[in-house]
Amino acid sequence: MGGNGGSGTNADKRPNELLGSWFVRSGWSKGELARQVNRRARQLGANHISTDTSRVRRWLDGENPREPIPRLLSELFSERFGCVVSIEDLGLRTAHQSPSVAGIDLPWTGPQTVALISEYSRSDLMLARRGFLGASLALSAGPSLIEPMQRWLVPSPAAPREEPEPAGSGRRGRLSRPELDLLEATTVMFRKWDAQCGGGLRRKAVVGQLHEVTDLLQEPQSDATARRLFKVAAELAELAGWMSYDVGLQPTAQKYFVLALHAAKEAGDKPLGSYILSSMSRQMIHLGRPDDALELIHLAQYGSRDCASPRTQAMLYAMEARAYANMGQPGKCQRAVRMAEATFSDADDFDEPEPDWIRFFSEAELHAENSHSYRDLAYVAGRSPSYASLAQPLMQKAVDGFAEDSEHQRSYALNLIGMATVHLLQREPEQSAVLARQAMDIARKVRSERVNTRIRKTVDTALRDFGDLADVVELTDHLATHLPETAEAG
Figure 1: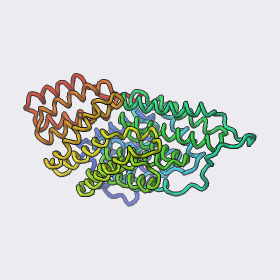
Figure 2 (figure 1 turned 45 degrees about the horizontal axis):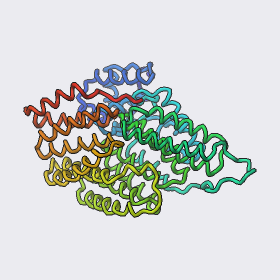
Figure 3 (figure 1 turned 30 degrees about the vertical axis):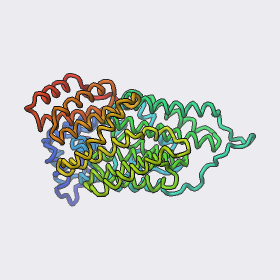
Figure 4 (figure 1 turned 120 degrees about the horizontal axis):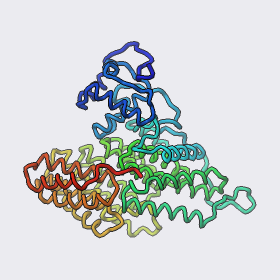
C-alpha cells in the first residue's frame, strides 16, 4: 500500500467532496494528476511512489493517502491555482510530524532556533533545486500559520544583557567587534545585490553566509555578541526567504521567514520582527490569501507599536492597505493609505539612525505600494475606472522615482508592469505595450521569476482583451523571443 500512496484505513469512507471540487476545477484528468504526482515524487527522491488512475479514483472516493502524497497534492494544486491550497483544503489528513521536520510551529528557544536554521540552510545548500528540500516541505496558511506566529508576542523568559561581558568571565566570544561589523556590512551588500539583480543571482551565497552565522552561534559567545549574531541571522534568513520568494520557491521562502522571526525574537529586535512579518504578509497577498496577510500585518503593528520608526510604521500601514484592497474593503484600504502617507511625512524628522533593512522604503516605494492598493481595488471591484484613476498618478510617481534609482532595478521593473496594468484597466493598450516592453528589457538583466511572471500575466491580459491590436500582437512576439522562461534559483 505504501508504495502507491494508499491509506492505512478504509473505515467510514465517503467521497472527498473538497478534493473532488479542486480536481474538477483543475481541468486535469485522473491520469494526468497521477503523472504529476509521480513526477513530483521522483523530484523529491520518493521513488517508491507509483500512482495510477485507479488510485486517484480511490482518493476521490474518500481514501486518505499516506505521506508524502497529501503534501504533493497541496503543492500541485497550489501551483495550478496560484494560491495556497492546504492539505486541509483538500479534505485530507496528514500524520503528525515533529516541528524540526515539517511545519512552522517551532520551539521559541535560542538553541533550537540555531539548530533549525543550521539544519535547514545546510539542506538548502545541498539539495536546493526548485525548492524541493524533502517531502516534508509545504506551505502553511490560515490558523496553522497565524497561531504559531502569535507566539512572537509572548515575552522571552530572560533577555540577554546588552553590556559586554567583563574580562575574565570565561564567556568571551571568539568574534571581535571588527569581525561583527564585517558580518553586518556583508548582509547590507547582499541586500543591495538583491535589489539590483533579483533573487536568482546570489541566493545560495546568502544561505551559505547564514549557515556560517549559525556555526558562530553554536560557539561560546558573550551575550552582547550573541545578540548581534542573532540579528545578523534574522536579517540573512529574511533575505534568503525574500530571494526564494522572488524566484518562486514559495514553501522555502515561508520557512526562512519563520526562522528569521525566531532569530529576531532572540535578538530582542521588535522592529526587525515586524519587517519579517511584513514580508510574510506580502507573500500571502501574492498567494491569494489577503486575510492571512492582514493578520500578519496586525501582529507586526501590535508587536512593534512602541518602538518602530515612522518609516517602518508607514511601510506596515501600506501593507495593511494592500491586504484590505485584496479583500475588497475600499474604506479600510483608503484609511490605511492615508495613515501610510501621514506617518511617512514624519520619517525625515526621525532623529535616530535607521537600520539598513528599512531604507528601501523611500517615497517612490510608498507611492508604489499605495498605487498597487488602488490598482488591486480596481480589479476586485470589477475593473473599476475610478480606482484605476486613483492608482494612475501614484504609479507614475513611483515609476519616475525608480527610473532615477539604479540600486532598485527590480522595483523599477515591477512598477513599469504596474503602470502597464493600470493602462489596461483604462483601456489604453498602446501605452500598456510600451511600458511592458520597457519592463522586459529590465527583466532580462534581473533574475526574478516574480518580475517575469507579472510580465507574462500582463501580456496575457492584453492579448485576451485587445488581441486584434497590432501593438499587442508585436508585444506577444517580443515576449516569446526575449523573456527567459524561468529564473534559476542560484
